[in-house]
Image (cartoon, helix red, strand yellow):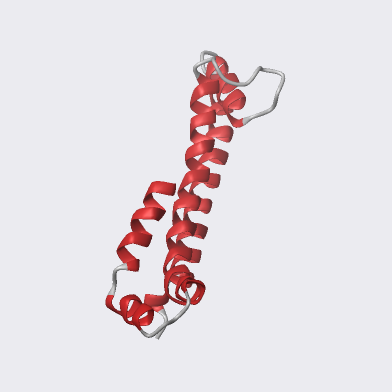
Length: 127
């Protein structure tokens, strides 16, 4: 994340309007707040909205394969693990659907909210 943001700052920093501002004597703080941050807010929001579902997915996977959280701590990974164990009984196969649906709903909703926030914060979209 830090490397990505640094690359974005380097790209935006060398644009003509920033060089012109620097030549006209604008302070570095004003250049950062007026020229760099409006572009970076949308990028940071989008990256964070994708990082949270990724972290949740990693926790589910690690717990599902058995090297994550202990079974006495409630988590989506433990719910999926318990549902997988119950899938062998035909009358209880639906037990895997609920944690999987919750995981999908959380992931999709965070992605949609992050994209909406990134679109709203992007200065290119404002007319």
